[in-house]
Image (cartoon, rainbow, N blue to C red):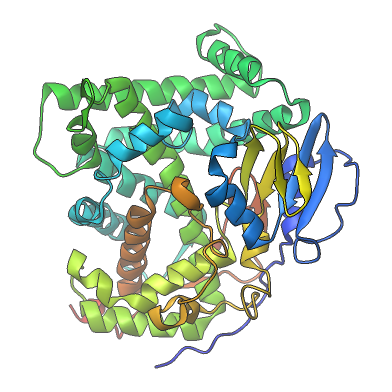
Length: 472
């Protein structure tokens, strides 16, 4: 059965500059022309409060920032609040410290170790499906919330083995309320643009202060909850070592210059994987189910592949390479609605991009969503077409045309992990059910720290009576 690419029905349009405006300047005025889309102008400049901002839409310009002159740019100030919660890790670190720790941790996230985590991921997916399946033929669920819970359990199991249940329950509240508070505080930072030293001082004070007003009180609660939970798991593992191939054991075994990786660094890396990793994957999976529901031909081909390869049984790591269309559905969803919808950087020294002067301290935004929908890079970009990501069609693509995991040497170290997790979830959830949209429920992208459905995505899990899983 072949899939015919079709334009998703009712799929909201999301222009790259409009997304940048929503996150950066909601409720504020902007100096300069910002009515142009990225496809109309490859570089757009404006001011937000004290901040000079450039958005770059040409992949050659993106190459300059992420590859050729990567040393000339740091993560922007938005990451300072994340550093306060997540600590100093590959996501928030810079310069020589980042290079040193990336070198240490690259072997930890090598494909052979990630593949060893497959069984750890599968167990919580099976538990999720057992809880979902109450015997009815049609089960209604809010997919974004369901994916948030599921991906947290999956990531937690891969990080900590099978002892994550109570921590997962604590973290669910952290994710839902903490990220909203962080978004509000981040917007305030972006408008006021305080110096980095002051931002870090404020972040440090948040953790120690006896009382704070909203939204800072929520950020303080997030910091303290995360600290208590993660340190508890680390101390438990040190007191009761295990032989599981989870990420915590791998991090505790890393050999650094002066012995083992410091426990504080272990805590910071684990926290980043747990919070940042599962949030992006949850949103990616939500958008994928939405897009598949709007494109039944692509979905039918995915179901046929899953049935043929798995035949109703539990998947193994060897099955992943036999699911190319299923993986392509995930990758095309990441193009269409990338959770990491923009990449902000700050110039640490004067630079020039194709004759445009970028002064030191200016913010450079790479609008991932705009680039992913640029017709110069993606024919029929508003069409959901997983065949773009089949091996025979992916050759020759500009390396900065597809950026769901960033690019350059700072590309996400968890890329293989996230793709394996997403493919497993897609295949296993499709063995029993087909997921349809609830008619009339509005689905609207909201550009917060990630691109997420503003009101969630209400869906109906419809039992597959003729699937191999049903026969089993």
